[in-house]
Amino acid sequence: MSDAPDPERLKKLEERIAELKKAREPKDSPHEEHFSAASQGWRMVIELVAGLGIGFGIGYGLDVLLGTIPLFLVLFTLLGFVAGVKTMLRTAQELGAKDAAAKAAGNTAGAKASEGEGE
Image 1 (cartoon, helix red, strand yellow):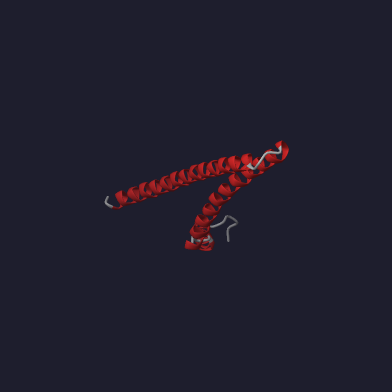
Image 2: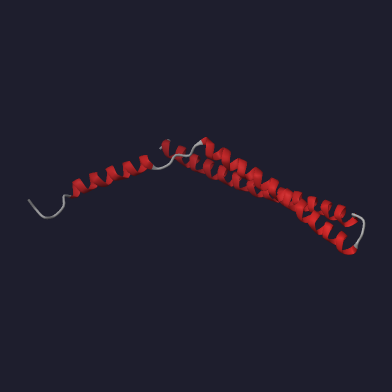
């Protein structure tokens, strides 16, 4: 018996370890996509409500400080709504750009794989 390890046995062991690691990796499920879409939707709702709440708070505070009728309350609530919608639209554009980039990357990878098959 020699003290040096057998390179062929080591290579087989490494391949077996790689196969087992691959089998243990978590697989993407449709549930993850659903939760991701739901979280994106909730993010947009929270942005809209936050805009309304901040506008309401500023307007109410100014009305109390100045002793006016709810003029500032209405004005700043509407401004908060506009700001919330604007932020929500910006988020939607950002998410749309990410999805488009992911699809383009997926199509590019698929096109390269199909090119390699024809050779």
